[in-house]
Image (cartoon, rainbow, N blue to C red; front, side, top):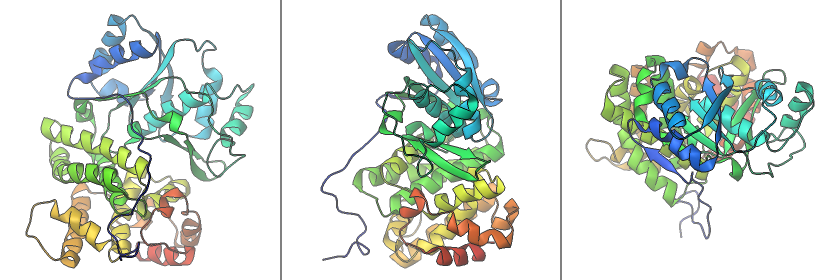
Length: 405
């Protein structure tokens, strides 16, 4: 009988599968947000990116849909970068008091969607009297930070409309919040936080800059690979990854060259959503575990951090995950090779794509100081690292990070 370490897949006698109950995919479908929202409520609280909403090309269709379905709306929050505890606390305290028939709609990248998810959940679960009180109440609901108070009241209905193809936040049950004052990045998490509906309109990513396409695209690939090989992998998410991964590997180079390529837009939007479903129902690994701590230490953008760390994570896990990596490689074009050679070929393909994307290759490029490598290793032990195929001590991880410095 194969041991757990040797098996290519974890045996399960039971499982939970969590996905958004409504998903609409296709070019131009942002116009349908109003129809979906009208099923859930009568008033829209709109959360948008500070600049992305105006640039994405979907504003007119979205607002027309609201009007056609008799929905009033207010832009109640603008995200700017990855959401912080302080930003959410301010937004909670400035929200309108009346929540009756409200639907929260977030239009933007992963940060905006996480902002909206957190806002919709906390709006029904805390009533702070000040921003200071709001901060403490949020901290008490973050994983591994405060008193571990759960989200018990159903959030306001939440609709996610991503304008980038990468984070998969539209499919997950958590919102990642950072706290610069306390030097951490943690999740607010609950099964109740899965969006009630997701509208995937691939045309919205056509306005993204090459840098955003590169960072979000490599983030997507990292999530697909890490969820496929992680310790908690299982059949359903793996099957979804096998469908989406080859599409993403082919589409990302085309999008980097031509953001208006509609076929590539569709492939990446689909892959990004699948990456969110897969990570949310399996797990992640080293690249994401370290990326979170690197973001806290250096302010490294999440996608770029993942791009620097993905080749490192693949090298570390190459032997233990050889057959899984070979399986992914064999889904791509090329001669069928023995597993060791196929796994190595996948790693080289990923490296080549990162070079094409122009993303950072060394941790020092983020401004990290060598003397902070031990701190980085010590603070990379969250949920993502628990899923890494090869379990590493902080000292072992520090040596790995030294090789990538």
